[in-house]
Each structure stands twice: as structure tokens, then as C-alpha cells.
Image 1 (spheres, rainbow, N blue to C red):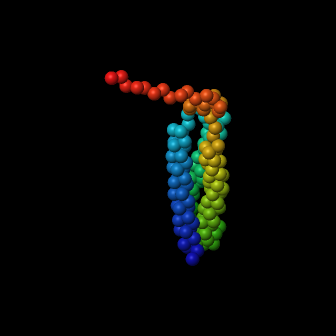
Image 2: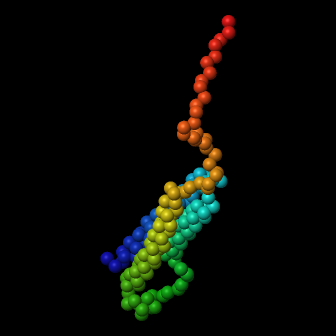
Image 3: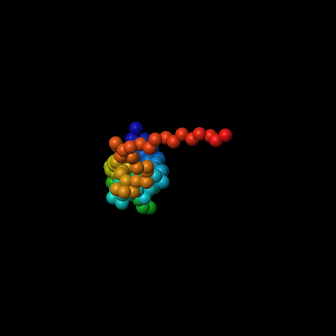
Length: 160
């Protein structure tokens, strides 16, 4: 059972890595869609809030993705021989179990980064619902004042 612990941990890391990659892709697609909807009538404050919230979300989820890639790829090349493994861990299975525990700890850390990133993205998306245009920039038709006199329709008669 202990021999499969590392394999199971790496399978979990792979699933989370794919999820993070999908989340980063979705966030950047949303940013592109929101960016096309921004006009000059959107205030600079709202643009700043969207930039900070969505940008922070992408950076934080990207950090989580980097952590999972580091888990899968290893941090640095090291040479460990069997004698060192047996001396420190008593068996190869225990060595693999320790590697799995370390990988799962790092995966938990990446989940925290991704959680914060998702929160910032949610804040950015909610802000898109609250965006307002700057005063005086509305180019729409002006409503007619109530109580104004209406102009009577002119009837034209065809000439013979």
C-alpha cells in the first residue's frame, strides 16, 4: 500500500495542475471579453479595480500552477544512493512515502494560492456588474421633460 502512495499523490497533483491551467485560461478569456466591453465612459477607478482584481487573480492562480509544476518536475537534480536512503528512511518505501507527504504539503499550499486567486477573480467579476459610466459621458437620447407641450401633427393634403 505504501508503494502506491507517491503515485496517488502525483495523480492528485496532475489533476490540480490541469484545473489550475483551465482556470488561468478561463480568467484570461474573461479578461479579454471584459476588455472589449470597456468604453471611454467607464471611469478610471473602475478600470483600476478591474485591473487589480483580475490581474491579481491571474498572478495568484499562476503561482499555484507553478507550485504544482514544481512538484511534478522536482526542485533540483540531486543524487541519492540506496545507502543514504536506507540510513535515513530505513527503506525505499518509506522514502517514497516521505516524498508523497512533501508533495501533498506543497499541493495544499498551492490550493491556498489558487483559492486567493479565485477570490480576486470573483471580486473582479462582481465589479463588472457594478461598473458605472462617468457623469456626462452618456451619449444616449435625452428624455423629454414631463409636462411639455406636444407639437400637433400636421396633415398634408395631396394637390390635384
